[in-house]
Length: 147
Length: 431
Image (cartoon, rainbow over all chains, first blue to last red; front, side, top):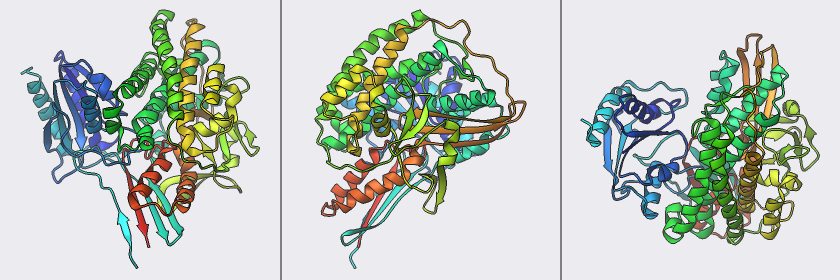
């Protein structure tokens, strides 16, 4: 079992994935916990050989900060991906699709996306997103069969 | 007047960390406007650092970029050591080079195979390329992981290393801890030799520009941490004189500052510049691979940056092996030093070019002023020029092809657009 938090803790709501991952680790669930602060391409290697992976990340604002999206990516990523034109790194969706294409996507992969509202460098987290942290931690624990 | 435009939008459920955008406006057979707009975090960090302890600079600046945290740490520790008047030497210095090798391996493997090669082979992205070339992508990921493992072991934590401090490290690895890396690096070096051969076969645009290349140059090494700042048109200065020769300017269309050489103009930093100014400092295996790939000792074709990156990837594997081979654990993990009132500068070779830091600190080590000049900001005017020149000589291309080629032109620089931004919005208008 692997829990991966993705984000940047100096960019407001983008920290949510990291906060959840750290909380899961603190609670000693027994799951392997990793954080990704940079390039999501590393997800491919991180997930390799795992049977169950939960990824937590912030996602773009779509009207409701703090809203939690759950995506079952066990068969790959079917939602929207980054458009062509990424210059510098891969995103989570691309890393999942890359792992699927290479035949090394774990059998069960779930992505929790928390809608954020503030992503600028130096932003405080919005209260709605901070408020979602415990709910996501509970959802992740349930996902892993830990509660 | 007919006007066609195209834009690519970021969609919900994709990561959002900022945005870069390119606007290219064509009128008849002329390019009338090229604007690369980026949002750049170093300005925030310069303010964020004021009032902090000098000891915090490596950790704080490491967060500017998820891809090259080592570069930010290295430039900051060198700048602080410059203030203190202390030089870190011997095995501690070697370990810093080893850490930098790890970052170059990670960053170059990522860029060459996950981002740049798909452009050359006509794929939308690495996922499409992986479907047809799974073995190649797996091999690239394995090499990249070797880089991650070096950063993890020497830097203390993968991505944003926390083991680096002013004067050295909090803890140095034992010989036994480094030993398992040797086998993996030997394999990575063999792979890198093949990678150079592979990228040399990619269909290449034949374009050469008369850049002024700027890079570090050291008397005996291919540069990572030390050396003078030199250029292909005669600059040869100590790092602390950087701001007497180079200047940053605000431009209306971007909140990133654009760097130029005073009274002269644009310049080019990064792998192409490093290679062209330091070919003679590469190890024999890297030189040989470069020559066999058809590169001369100077390379002015920005599209061949993919080949140069592969040569540097090979060099980084080779250099890491050399360092591990001669490693003796230093008696102390760091050189003790005290802060003093003053100004210090550091410049190191991030994977995408020179990264300059300057700090002014007080007698207690409090940071009074910080200045950070990242490589992408230095390259921005040159990237715009390249896009302009490329578009002008390929006006017959259709919208889709022009978009792809402009993206590729920008990707030649592996630009760190807002250092954590994953998106480039491209807009082409024709009148």
